[in-house]
Image 1 (cartoon, rainbow, N blue to C red):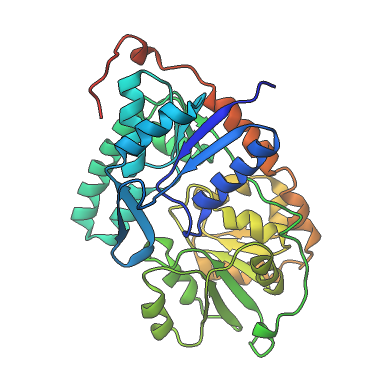
Image 2: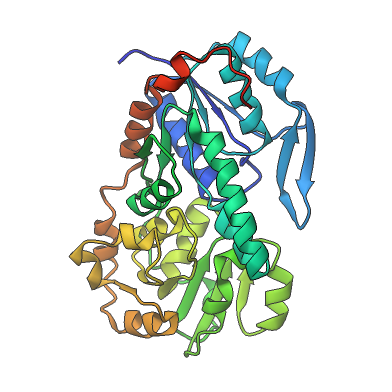
Length: 363
């Protein structure tokens, strides 16, 4: 295999802890192990004007980075360019690629239109959902390949008239995320069963449906976000813990009794793989992500998908608690397989409509 220089530009990067960051980090790690040279550009005040989002201080966006991106193109001279997000760094990189007539790939990680709809009154939500799909469709239109995580998301985007969609799945390190089943002092005094949620604490994650479940035991939330203070006051019996990563997070997964996934707007749900790798049973809505991941009949041994989340929880707790079953189920979801898909896709040729349209003023 010929070794390549790969430039990945993302508006989502450290100190954020989310599926986008973990996916890009793991993919870059495998690419480097294979000998490729990878450069990841994320928000940085040295690249331009950087601003933290209101209510989301961990999410920073860098504007006016065109000069930095242009210099990087000239010095790094990448063989392949991947634009991971549709933020200001993504738009700057897209514009330069179009100006220079070079190919680039993109990925669709976050369902922003649905997030907007969840945060706005119904009539405004529908308007901005339609508008944001139009903007996103334009962003991805001239990409050589638009990478999506699941067939369900591919179907949704085809209905929105996106093209050149390709599947790029996800992985999990099952040497880190394992069914350890060691007790944690943090949970010793808490009533069982322990119902666990891991992820951003925000309205679009539908966490109230999780917290409103009437059952014995304890609701545990691991993560950060704009609604932590509000929900922790509203639900004083729940336990809200700070974000965790790696082995520390794996211990918390493995110490729980059930993983609950309330989100209806995920593009995949990387935490589902991590929970399975740690041997947890799963309760979820039948939403994109869980529907794709748990489509085979073997998943019925430890997963319940139900439009009533409380029913899903009750039924999942009745299933046999056999950690090896979910752990073995996700064996095929490796970061090596994920990275192979990514590398195959970034080699996609320029779309035909771009071959005759340079120089382009689009962007």
